[in-house]
Length: 145
Image (cartoon, rainbow, N blue to C red; front, side, top):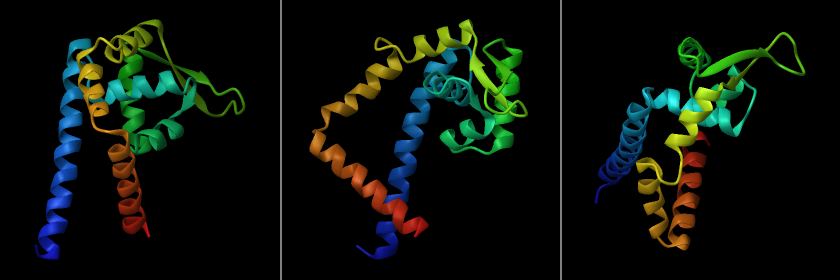
């Protein structure tokens, strides 16, 4: 196989996997009345309470302006709230409201369709998954290198 074809196939494979994961996330998000990106923000805030916008953007691999707009809509929906950051009163931290926490718990509960489907990945032998992760790191190193 020519090197350009292999490169194209590799890129196409990443797009297909990313698209399938996003479709799963979007389906679960729709059940909860939020967008897929909003659901990712809720999950990130669950894992990193009182995160700043910059931290969220870095965690989610999104721009600060994109995250800021998502946060604005989540605040308007009553799912997150803004607070002054503990260590730096000039910065704003974001945290889940009770309703935001409920949606996050529901969407990522073991019984949710999203998590049941994601857990199927664990049917792949651990050695193969670890090899895949090493390959992903190698690809990132080559791209960024």
